[in-house]
Amino acid sequence: MNELKEKLNKNISYHIDRVAEKGSSSFSTCDHYSWDKDIWNYRHSIIDKLIDQGYRVESAVNHGVLDVTITANIEL
Image (tube, rainbow, N blue to C red; front, side, top):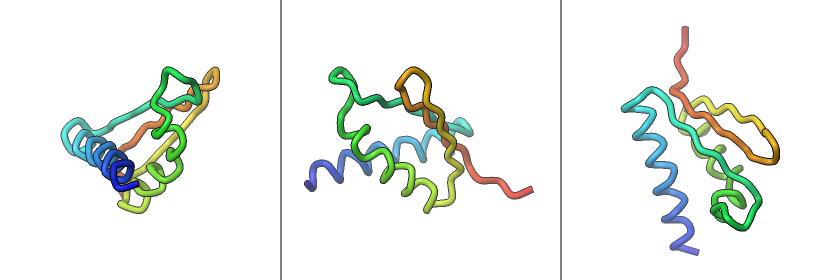
């Protein structure tokens, strides 16, 4: 379980760093054998953690694939 938490936190850190560098980040996931099963199974936890840290997260499903876009939450 610790390896899983480390993997998911590493994924979250990657997206946070990418938002800081590029302004946005994204990932796609799907319930299919050739996709990363951990990202699919814990997608809600990943998204919740990013939202809790103040990021804006948008998602859409196309042909069974979940596309997630992360940006910094800017108050206008």
